[in-house]
Length: 560
Image 1 (cartoon, rainbow, N blue to C red):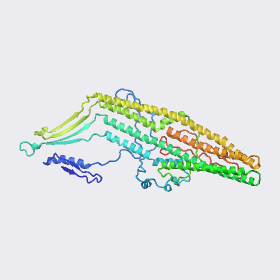
Image 2: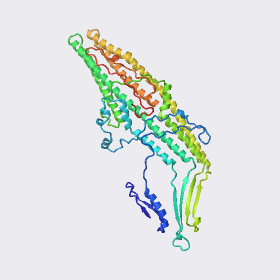
Image 3: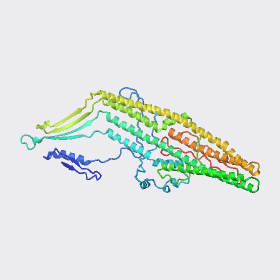
Image 4: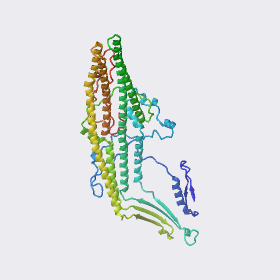
C-alpha cells in the first residue's frame, strides 16, 4: 500500500491509499504510472473560479424552439421569440450573502440580526419613504438570497455539461515475466478518451444555460413579489399613523367643544347632559386610540420582520403626503407591457426552450458515442507491434428506450407550454381586475376631495356655530363631529387602498405602468382645511403630488 497525504489541504481530514498491484514495484519503467497515479490522487479538490459572473445576469438565450426544431419532425409548441421579453434592461443581480442563520438560542439570534436602526439608512431619514424601505427589504430578504444561490448553482451546470469525461489511464503487469531470462519485463500502458457524438455536448450546455437563465428570471420575479409585500406593509403603517393623527385632531376638537358646553352649563344655558355627553365621546375616542396604537405596532412589526429586525424596533414615521399617479394606460396596454416585462413569463418560456432542447438531445442518443484508445503493450515481445491505437463505439440497438426518451421530452415541453398558457390567462384576468380596482380607488379619492370631506368640514363648523348661538343641541353637534371623524378615516383608508392596489398592479405588469401621465393632486389642502375659527381642528394631512417615481422595467431590484 502507498499512502498519499494531502498536506496542502488542511481541511481535508482523510488519507488516500493507492494499492499498487499488491506487490513490490520493480524496474524503473513502473515509476512512470506510479508517479502519474500519485500525482492525480494528491491533486485533490481545488475549487476554481466560478463560471457565473457575480456582477451581471448571465446571457439570456433564445426562449423558443423554432418550428420543427425537434429532429423528430414534430412542430414546436414554444411561443414566438418576439413574444418573449428581452432581459437586456433588467437590473443586474448581485450576489448576496445570507444575513441571518438559524441559531439555537436567543442570544445567537441577537448577534445575527442586522445592526440597530441607529446605524441604518432608514433611521437617518426624517420620514420613512417607501422607496428606501423597498430597497432595504430587497437587500436583506433571505428568499431572494436563496434564489440567487439557486441561480448560481444552475449557472455552474454549464461547464459540467460541456466538459468531456476524464481520460482513463491504466496499466497491467505480467508477474510471470519478473526475473525471467526467457522474456522481457511484461507490462501494458493504456489511455483512452470518450468523445460523445457531435452536437451532444453543445445541446447539454445550451440546456444548462437556458435553465440558468430561467433561474435568474425567478430572482426577478421574487423581487417583484417581495417589493409588493413591502409596499403593502408600508401603506398599512401609513394608514395606522394617519388614523392616529385623525383621532388626535378629533380629540382636540371635542375637548374644545366640551369647554364650550361647560361654559354654557355654568352660565345656565344648557343642561349638564351636554358636558357628560362630551365626556362619553372622549372616552370612546380614547378607546379607538388604543385600537389604532395596536394596529400601528402590528404594522411596524410586519415591516421590521421584512427587514430582519426585531418586531418592536423603532421606525421613522411615514410622511404626511403620498404621491398619486395620473391616469393609467388601458388594461390592454398594461397586458402588452406585462408580456414584455414580466420575468415569470420569460422564465416559463425558457423552460419550454429547455424541454425542446432536451428532445433534440434525446434524438442524438440514436447515434453512437466513441472512445479512442492508445496503448503500449510490452507483452508483445516484438517491439514494432507494441504501440496500438483503436476506438470503441456503443451500438444503439435498443431503440425503444430512446424513442420513449424523445416522447418524454416532447410531453414535458407540452406540459410547460400549457403552464405558460395558463399563466397568461391568469395574468390577463389579474391585470384587468387590478386595473379596475385602481381606477375605482382613484375616482373614490376624487369624490372625497371634491365633495365628502369639504361638506363634512362645513357641517361641523356650521353645527358648532349654531350650538354656540343656542340654535342646535349638543347631540347634533357631536353627531357632526363623529361623521367628520368617519369621513377622514375613510379618506385615509381609500388612500392606503389606492396605493396597495397600485402596488399589486405594478407586480402583475412587471414594473410601474409605462406611459402614465404626471401625478395629479388627490385631496388638496384647500378641500380639507378647516375654517379658521377659535377652537377649530387642525387641518387634516392630505396627499399631494410629489414627483412620480419609476423603477427599472421588470426588475424591481430598485423600486424607487
